[in-house]
Image (cartoon, rainbow, N blue to C red; front, side):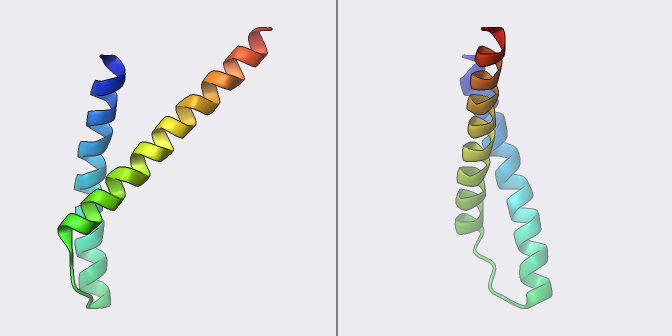
Length: 66
């Protein structure tokens, strides 16, 4: 359950930060702002990054204990 909760928090904050950065970047570059596309892409990138780091650190801890 802890894994699910932590991933939900990551998704929530990734979408929020992605929307803010996307809005500011879109305004500065005078591009169209697509909130759904930015939110989904940031959520996917954040999930891959966080879970990848977690898996790499688990492998590193397991090899150092041997």
